[in-house]
Image 1 (cartoon, rainbow, N blue to C red):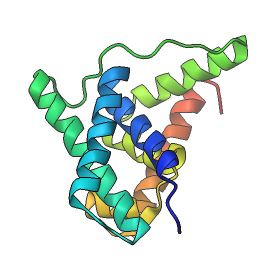
Image 2 (cartoon, helix red, strand yellow):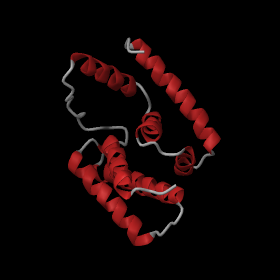
Image 3 (cartoon, rainbow, N blue to C red):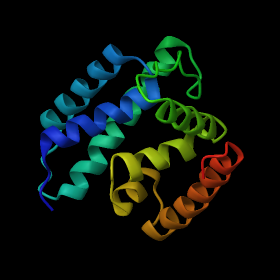
Image 4 (cartoon, helix red, strand yellow):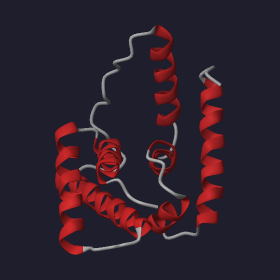
Amino acid sequence: MAVNIEEEYDKIYRYCYFRLRERELSEDITQETFLRYFASYHHTDSLSMLKCLYTIARNLCIDEYRRAGKRETEHPGGQPLTASAEEQVLTSLAVRTALSRMEAEEQELLLLRYVNEAPLAVIGQIYGISRFAVYRKLLAVKGKFEEELRKEGEF
C-alpha cells in the first residue's frame, strides 16, 4: 500500500480541524505533524507511517488544548454551513446533531474510519487495541450514530 503524501496531508488536516475547529491552528498543527515526522521517522511501512502521523497529530492537538487551558471535548464555535440546497442543510444539521450526542472518542473513530479511511490496523495501533476490537467498537459506534440519525428523522 503506497502512501500519497498530499492525500494524507489533507486527512491529517481534517483530523486536526475536527479536534480543534480552528482553520489556521489546524493548518499549523498539520504542518508541524509532518515536519516532526520527516525529521524523526523514516518508516518504509505505510501503516507505520499513518499510525505515526496520527499519533503525532493527536498529541499536538492535546498539547494545544492544554496550552489554551481547554478541555479536550470543548470545541470553539462550529464551522458555518455552506450547503445550498435545503435538503443538504437539513441533512447536515441532522448529522451534526447526531454527532454532537456522541462521545469525542466515538466521533474520532467515525472520522478516522469513514472520513479519512484509516485502516483498522492503524486505528488499533493509535488506540493500543487489536483491529478486531476496533471493528467491534466501530460497529457499536456506527449503530449508535444510526440510532441518533433515526431520532432526527434522517435514516
